[in-house]
Amino acid sequence: MLPVVLTCIPKLYLIKIPPMKFLSSLILSFTLIGLWSCSDSGNPVDSGNNTSDPVLDDCGVTDGDNSSCVNYSTEIKPLFDSKCTGCHGASGGLNLGSYSTLMSGGSSGVVVISENGSGSYLIKKLRGAETISGVQMPKSGGYLDESDIQLIETWIDEGALNN
Ligand code: HEC
Image (cartoon, rainbow, N blue to C red; front, side, top):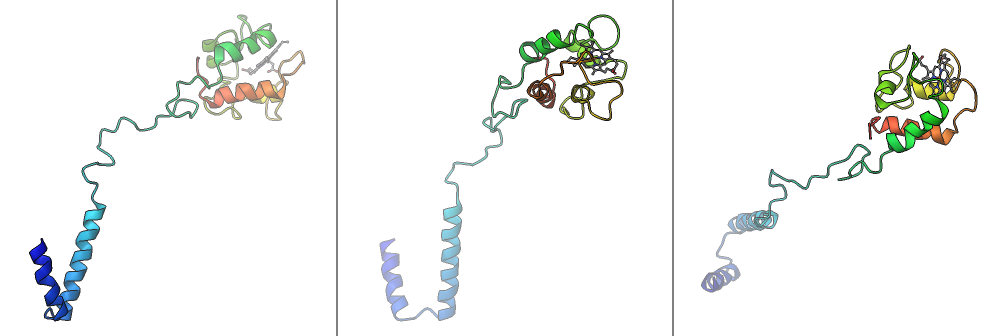
């Protein structure tokens, strides 16, 4: 290396290298330096079988286990049991007593559209939306607090899981 440098320096000083050649070797040098600095030095960013890609759970939590989702069995079903199943039990029509009967709907068809809380008929009935037929639920009055309706809506938005 050293002899090369030593032989190059005098040549440069004597301007024996024609200016155009000097310029083109300068450009080549910068290109090579550029390529070298861009090299990943053997540490590829993506090896193709990257197992550490972030995975979102049903509630959008990175690498989560759905534990932050609204829970059907501990939060939603108890609400139905205390406010709805007196009328929406086993006898005909919409049965709110279990997850499967809730999801199969009532005489108007499906009342829960997974991931679409505000579009679900159940939520419209609870808010007494103008588009519903019949009356706001619960029929006997004592409507749900907005926070409870929102809880059910969130549960539906999160995929209406049987959790
Ligand atoms: C006092 C009895 C009573 C209670 C309590 C009650 N409902 Fe109802 N519900 C009815 C009757 C009667 C209908 C049918 C007439 C109507 O749609 O207004 C109905 C209809 C519905 C429908 C429409 C079903 C369909 O297929 O058309 C939904 C959804 C509903 N109820 C949800 C609820 C929820 C959720 C609760 C509890 C927060 C509740 N109801 C509490 C009597 C009740």
